Length: 152
Image (cartoon, rainbow, N blue to C red; front, side, top):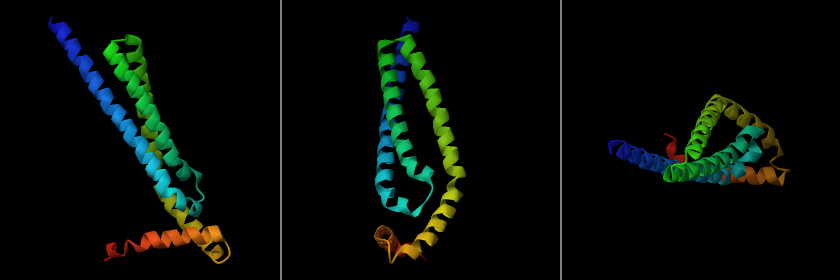
């Protein structure tokens, strides 16, 4: 009787944690979509393809986490050993992928700044002649002018 109660507790804990993972996957998906939407005007100012694809990676990872967590919830509720084992392997792979992306983002943080400054300096010369560059710089100037109060 105690073993059955303990397994029932594990079953519902696994379901609850998978529900939490599903919500986390949706949050990552939403953050990636918002980052893609907000960063789009500034992508013309950088020549790094890694940074323009980072929000897309977040969207894909969010979808994968949501799907895997959904299968984990189903495996927990149905008590299917194969689904739970597959779910565990997928979670391990997702954790390793997130760790790798996090480390790559942290390591390449300085490269983004250097690339951004280099691209800014190269493209400012095209401001009078190139309409796309002019529009991008106008957006940057409008957005940055709102932060005047942060400078002390």
